[in-house]
Length: 204
Image (cartoon, rainbow, N blue to C red; front, side):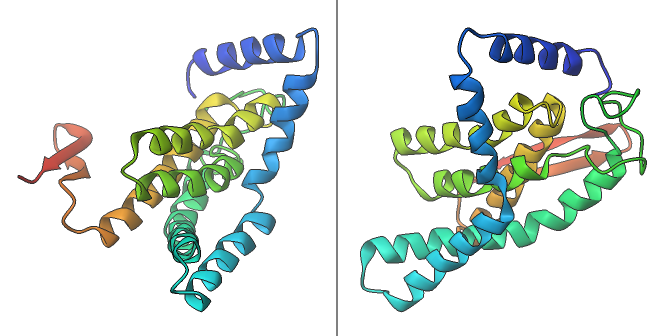
């Protein structure tokens, strides 16, 4: 965000997609924005959860219900820190400020893409629910669709959509860790007087 990398990727993406011989790619990616619209996704999560509760003997409904419930919990867990980080970074949209993607705390609220968070959360949640490598890879690939739409629409810088995706990943991981306390791998934030990082724990 605070380097020339953000703008470089943004310019390359805009020239490659918008400058293509056909606008088919642009229109397809633009339509994916709605995957991150909470007005649509939250009712879908709630409906899936309700279906699972009403039809507990139906395998598809039961699985969908768990996915809906975990997606909603991920939203509840991730939305507050997302909003706080939007304020703390204070980043602006492309062409919106002379500071570009640089963080200007409390000056704006676009430092983290909310659409990226909402659009990637259900896919990451689904990926966390399966052990099938093919499905897991497919779901993780799907989690990039909404974030790409925001770069495509010139609505966010790459760092802002990456942060939105990462917040969704952390929220889905927190829910998954709660539901699977015996998971072999766990990741924790690490903070000491010498610096910060991530600590990994493997149980065996």
